[in-house]
Length: 88
Picture 1 (cartoon, rainbow, N blue to C red):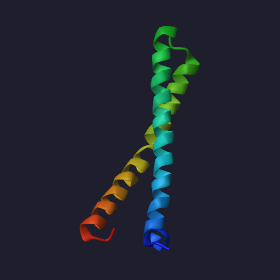
Picture 2 (cartoon, rainbow, N blue to C red; picture 1 turned 90 degrees about the vertical axis):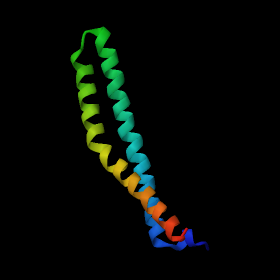
Picture 3 (cartoon, helix red, strand yellow; picture 1 turned 90 degrees about the horizontal axis):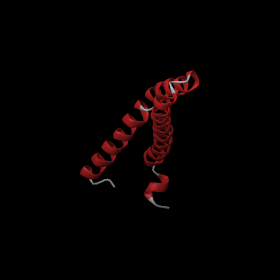
């Protein structure tokens, strides 16, 4: 077995990386949904349902996105630090 398969720190880091990817995918998808809803609202006279979709999806994206972004940068920093120390 290789070190990457047995090192608990690397395994935990990989689990976090997968969750970060899902969190970013969900958060950015909600952001895109919000943008599309606003662009559809403009020519259609701001229907209430589309305004709600835009507001809720934007709010959820603002709640969801910060943590995956921060953890993503943390993982990159940890890997950069490992390379500096010659660990991986």
